[in-house]
Image 1 (cartoon, one colour):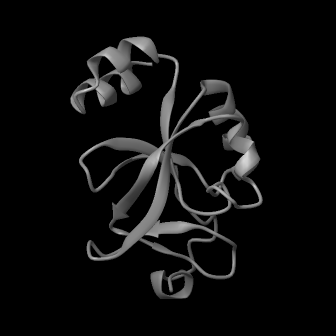
Image 2 (cartoon, rainbow, N blue to C red; image 1 turned 30 degrees about the vertical axis):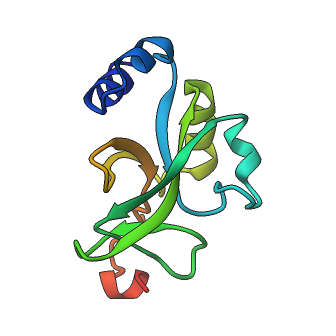
Length: 130
């Protein structure tokens, strides 16, 4: 809750920080987006708008996933505020290779996102990026 409160306060949303202290910002870029097949897993999360995440690129061969990359690369996605229990369910759904990490978005705000961290470290960056 402290992270969310800090995030909202830092972004000039002090009243909202108090009102929604139990909600967490989540950046989504794949099948969790509006109109996609897994959007219902967000279970009524509030859409906060489209956002850009710099320094990441999409991967190939494993479905929608992103990995850290060149600062010039970017991902277009959507920002939601989600309840903690929904986030826990998404953690379980995405599994160990997609840990939830705090990222900085183009507007200076911070949100959680699921970043691909392959178990097989033998893959080079070129093997998993577009």
